Length: 397
Image (cartoon, rainbow, N blue to C red):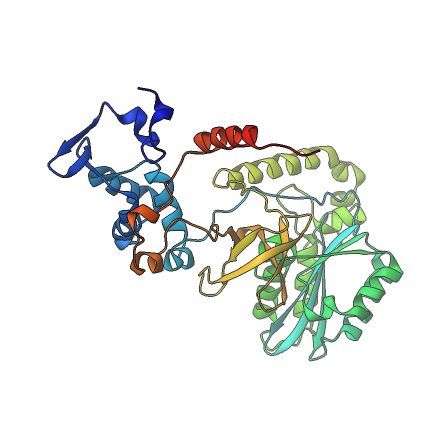
């Protein structure tokens, strides 16, 4: 018997013809009941009553039912289930991404605001040396005040080539952007709800905030205890063996800690190569540990429909469309309301196709009659049939 002599509805069973048998009115494939096309949506809904994942539902189906393409239909059913999509777990972290390697002090800086005892503070940290600059802002955190603080920083320590912030209202204003353009500073902002992308500033804020809470819990840093402590903070070597002061000035700063004059001699400071080696080894080790539990997520393209995770509830309850792709795994999204959101790839998950085979609503709808159901065909058979059809169609020139 020729396979293509069979009706279309029977062709998918050609390879299984030796394993099919009848038990009264039932057709079986091994111990599994062969489900006709008209009943598949209802069976899929019953298989998904437990709302388990794709693999668990497939294992359940392999105990009882079968039809050609059952695994793909189960995957489509699970992915089209609204409660399952909303309550999906958070995605894994991606490999470490660092696109900033400054070669001189204050070439690249990070900045962020924080508050202690109701008073606002601005922290600006050099990404090479770690040198912190702390500015007491009181209650004035406007763009005008922020520009004034940065202008003084540029005057005293030089103009950086790059500034990274969290994109707060002070940093996102047109006035601040125009100010940075005049001074020739590139401004990079981290995506919302993803502080990891501005981790350097977050680390500096954490250190300085804890320091202020210990020496000036009232928020008044105009005191001797704060000045002495900040001096030691700038003098303390990091894991590479160099302090922010040594990187910036080439020597430690004299402080209240007793030190011999020989500690300031050049021969004790000529350790740049060994410190650089330690810094490179530490970076490789940190990257290796971080990436050991990370996995890259496939990139998204413009026009892709995605689900968006709520950073508070951790639920994937919003749907948007990709309208822009950034440089650092960030995307612009157009929401159904017309608003534009900006999110990191970790908070985006590709949405299932709208024409998924089955949903819970479809399962409760009236079933079509068997003679009106379009038979399911494999892509290879569809391609062969389409080719034959094209060959029979006359072409007009």
